[in-house]
Length: 366
Image 1: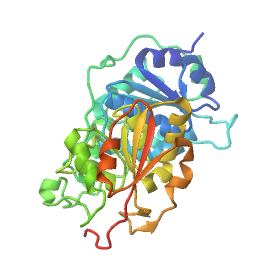
Image 2: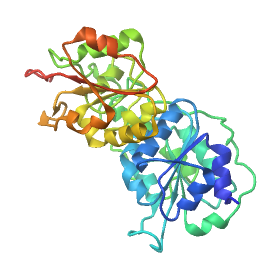
Image 3: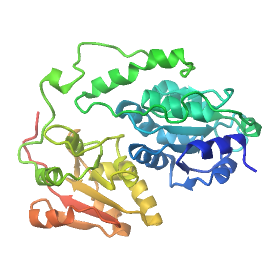
Image 4: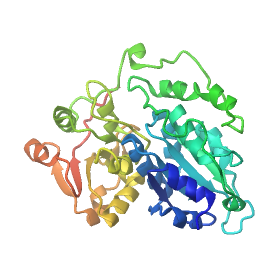
């Protein structure tokens, strides 16, 4: 016999991902959720499903919110398509965990809807709010809530709306302006239970057209051939934070979305099946999704641009990523081997890691 919350998740979500722990383990078993290596990867998978038009739910305990926080905040800025709901179980008496946290506070950090469990249909309302405001919604429960049942459905819960991605022409500041523009309506709807710091509005441009410039390649960048080839072939990718973001900036349009550092692998696995990342982003936090995919035998083409440094923050050194990817049997080539690269930039039905090595030029862009 499932709880009312478990029934609601099964009724609304096309996919469910989870990481077990008190008080969510029982709920995970009820819903048949797919267990994932960590909470950040779970949310990345959900975002990939969202981009593919599938509603997705992520079930975590309160400390798991700390792990997925970066992706959650980036999702508010980037936007989404089909709704995503995080169902988080808090443990206010520290019965089965080491800390006490109130997960509703994440609504203020990520500027996303928090749905009260007292409503007639909290999960359905959360999916509706997610699509209405193009960001992840949070449903927070405590152990006693699992004994409740809910009757009926909330207005609009049957996919009457669909979220949107942020306009690619927006600057990073412009994305923030877009995200904060929904705050008055979310407050009016009762979805932001705690105060949030206002966005300090200044004269910063909100679009690249308004600014009159876009970030470009460094002169002599060894990876430009990769971008040109993907563009010519119309291969859609999920971009990572770093130089791969250029795939979303004119003249390139093959990058679909970015959800923060190390996110491209997990998101791409459930959407485009092609991830474009850098060696630092992969080592930072993308490798966990790669491990999860390898363990489950899931397909993905993961293109790693290896320059052995943090190219956008001052060229700080990065460990050799090849040392840590033996489990994936990566293919390595030099950025100058255009013919070889051209034959390898093809999506497949298996997990393939392609490492393209090149050195950043001494003269960098300004």
